[in-house]
Image (tube, rainbow, N blue to C red; front, side, top):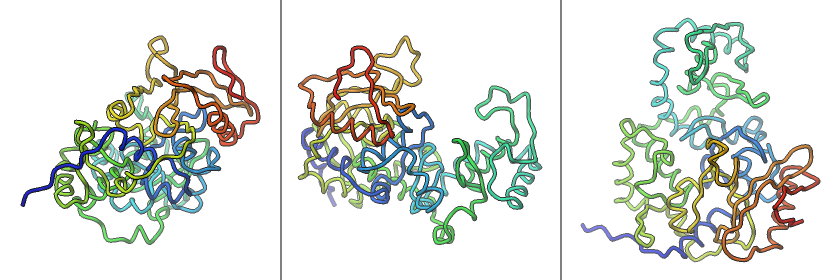
Length: 381
């Protein structure tokens, strides 16, 4: 049986569909139903990355409102996907395979410090949700100073248990994890589901990745997939999904990708004519090479670039208008003021009225009552 060739699409068609697919108002449950997970990042000049992703899709969203959904209603959980993420509980069962892949990074803890593992688990079981500093068991290893998780054996043990899925984030206190046993965090209907096979898990995660982005190049960077190639065999599973038409091969003026059927339903739709400030780690921006191919917009997140080597700034947000990027900006919200520190326009006239509407909405999102401008930044309001 001969497989049909890829669906050939123009860049213009895909730009419209991609922006229409992502930039539409919905409720938090709608957004997570589509994106499946949102990367968690603690840096917070104008809310965190996950806040920024949500404000682009939830009309009246304010910084921090995700916490009620995560820690009170248990609609989403604070765990690990391709990175630290907020994830819909519908995806928890599939991501148990990630716990297995991750656990090997902590073999040293389980092998060399079984007493620490037992002490931590016993305290959690007896006392309940605890942050690392709450534990009576506190032990440090000076030789671990400078390592990724530091010299605290207590903290390293907690991370080993967290990555292995034996404990979870119950809540956060001043941004710090508060841990509890997994069986006391996961709602019973998800906890008691039949455990998926590895292949079922990988297939589900791949389906979620494609649905979250809309489409993905087979050669997209590792950061997009977040799956260990050796353990997951995700390329072979993806190829089967393409053969079964669960993913649809497309070609966008010479660049091949595989699309979620949900995305293709947006090919005849147009995005709203509004200005949106896009998070650095938004799903739209995951594959920056594809974004440059589609939009002619080159973006690099310069948080980890030395200051003297930055081209635009520390925490710069792409500015989207309809189906084109019109510029980039860096803002800072503090003490009730939204400061525009930097603004760089792409070619073309700026849509001033939509920018003003977007800034007023962004002020409400950050609870700012005033706006200020750095030298050289145009005064929009």
